[in-house]
Image (cartoon, rainbow, N blue to C red; front, side, top):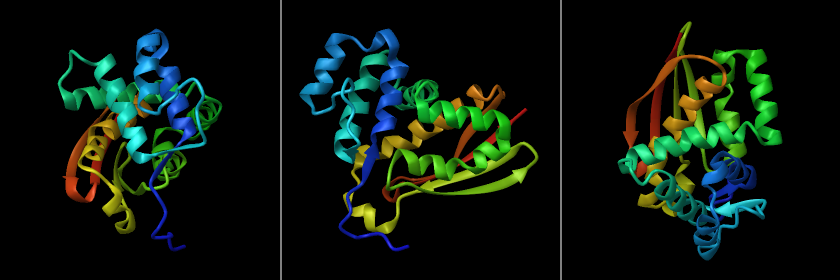
Length: 195
């Protein structure tokens, strides 16, 4: 199905709801106010947020909760934190329950569908590399590329953290390595292996 070239990249509300839950006590009144000042109210989540709003929100949160970390590690850490909070939302809990039934490999095979429930501009390809090894490529379709910003390149580390946390919430020990990152095209490939 062809995408409407006029469509805007958006992130869906449950992604922010999961982020809010993941912060716990770190979601201070000061952080809430800093976010609200930039148009992100985590106490009243909307159905969807424009990409710029989402990026502003996660940048503020990453700096607030990971100020002592290097910038790339902040976003990787935030991705992990997000996934641990997301599994506490109704959608995330259902996904976790299914993941425990399906197992690591089948859960990772479904990550493309999972990414699509978070945002409308993420496409993915999953490759089976062996019994306990896979690769996942995430990319932005051409019609969305003009609407992406340099700031949105932080997702390379953020998604790495999300994928690492998928292994963690499923009880698997493993690694997620970035094997390709074409930042201008927002095209990232990860190799995931686990025990």
